Image 1 (tube, rainbow, N blue to C red):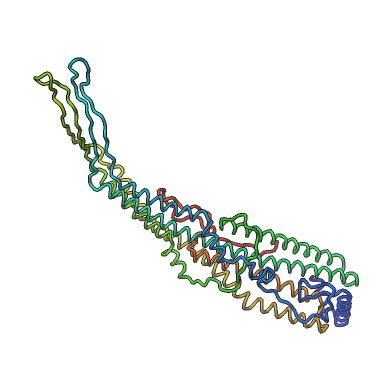
Image 2: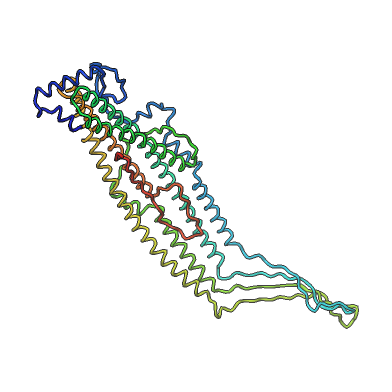
Length: 486
């Protein structure tokens, strides 16, 4: 393409330039191309061109029709109904509530048979009867145990809220990744068509003796590269759709055209969002709830050193004969009270462990806040740079590229510019549009990640409340690289 541009530069002389322009016009008249429209019929004459066609968003949506679009609202509703992690979180709440009920139940009494000096023979002496035994829990240990599991219920509820945010954020990010891939697929197809237009022009110039084989081969290599890029983008679109369908809970969902505005309604964030993530994230609340749970565990461990009382009462029938051989001693009551002496085991080990766990949990709150602030800062930096790039493309770079392409098109119609320069200007415009789409994708994905407190993995299972909670889990912040041509 550099050789072609040199061929048409004024530096080579006005006579040479004019002759080549006339040659290009005559070649185009024989088999014209329409630089303003990437998919125009190849036999349309240049004088039939009414204007240039710039890259625009939403072409796939226009082809599909409004009624056939897969919207973000539909995606969110599908995920709420089918994503398995949400049902896991609800089951976790029910399990924690059941454990809290179980922890507060009083021990069951024991009933049994008792016998003493049982023997047969003529005297039939001995005792036989039954007894009831009950453990009396002291020191309010049951209420302390119930409080421990109530904290687990609270933790499970926060986990469920966190999982809802995680799933909805993952769905939104996946949806906009599909939307960006959909837009990029159109632009890559346009670039492939532009490259074919350029190749066709080079071949005609070669036939006219104005280009050699090396220039044709170079242009053909670029055309093949653009065609490969377009096909790879189609594969990427299908891959992004499969990722979205998996998060929704319907992996068998067929590929559909998604509806949305990639270049409007961006997430509007400032640096205060970093502090908001650190303060308001469910991870911070989980860390605080874990510290409360550790405090409840310590209170329970301190009460466990108080021994329980075991009470036992029974009724035995004594067969021992009295002075009157026809009479026996008969029914006799018995009772027992027992208590363990805390001489050696005063639960001191568990108390010390609970104190250490409480200290760890308190430090965990600070660690979580610092970690969230660090990760949010990194994400915000990526968001801010992407937003700066998107604004620059939208407000400055793309308008200049469109103006350049439009002027080149007009000069071509006035026989003041060669057709290869029009093609080159058009190619540059569509490549810039591709870069703009990639910048928009990063704005959306990082912005949504920050709004969702960096909770982006919609298929990660919620932590079971009975286990040590991982308050900071993998965020999988997306870093798309699709703006770069292969």
